[in-house]
Length: 505
Length: 50
Image (cartoon, rainbow over all chains, first blue to last red; front, top):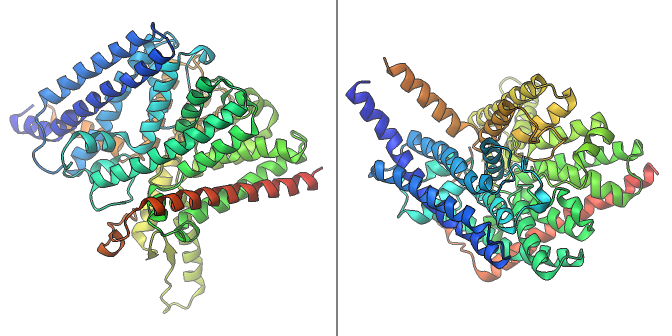
């Protein structure tokens, strides 16, 4: 490779490596939290796993940060995208170490799958014997999903660097684009204030409901904390293999629903409401789109389950039909039925309803995945705009307006951007679906599981398990990663690698 | 896609503990109302398909 090419590579990769080093330092510090929980739970044999993980994270992070110079100028778009893509891969591989050391994973790939599932707030799990996992490892898994939902790279760099010049590019690369504050560091802090306030409220409420379900005070607190972190981040991890069904408690289910619906809302919406603009929740296009689609799909699912006699009585229909549909639509993945039950009893129509809900997803700039309500709303607005344009006289100027934090006029760039991301989601879904069918899984279950991975949901019909072929685990890991970052950062990394290869003689 | 930098005017509306508490209450109430509406609709459908 020529000297200028190498310099160009280093110019773009250097900041990505340096920032990745800082992110890994952050994770080394975070690994001390499970150590504290393990000490409180007297799990002495678990503590070395996390200390080793912290040591490796510190060493690898130092290698990244010391080998690459600190960026002196504002990050370019390419550098921002590369930083996020490289950081997510490095963090996944390093954070999988304590999980793998626990002995609950069949291979290091399984541990990486689980960590990526946590970071992307998906919730599909390859962990074995979940019911006997240590409190430390449970805390670690739920902490990862909580961090992934808020935007971990921006968080880490907002706190570990001064000023973070060009940091907005990192924010966009992590799939969020709503400015809450003029500066991205302030935006990252605002997101964390919102999440931490709800962390306190949610943990208290869910601890009380877990107590009502019969858990001891200490267990109730831990379960309350874990379930809150998975609910708010629309993650779907749970400390027991039966997921939310374990509690057999309407109170836990309803409280969880409140927090995962809140978690699926745009951080910009939380910010606006907290600043006194409470009418925004009614006027916001994204909230309107989510309300219409989730109510319609929920009631269709309930009608089919009731007509088919799968559940009798409104309570069972609500706790199963509505719960699973809203869990799917907010891309949470909490389950109150067994995967085998979903596959065998629910029927194709309801599975298709759930597939649609999983692909539609929650809100933009939230912890949720999927197309996002904003894009769904814009697509519908664009369709109506075209119909109105066809019906109007040729000389007429047709203007379509929508409200998203402010009154806006629908423009081509809005529609183009919305349809581009929807098309990329559908392409990813199709590839994952085909791969699952190619691995020998049934058509309907393959479609369901592929939608769950693409939309970062976590509902499972039983495909995602340690018995999956290794290459399919890899496909699902990449699908979750691509879906979470909304393609741009990953496409930048792939494009960069291809460009580099072409330059190399 | 439709991101915005808050204008000077909107930046003037800062968070306060009172506003944030009212915000949490308003958001939670809105979500509870949404879930209640779904529960009532489920009750109705349960009756229709009884």
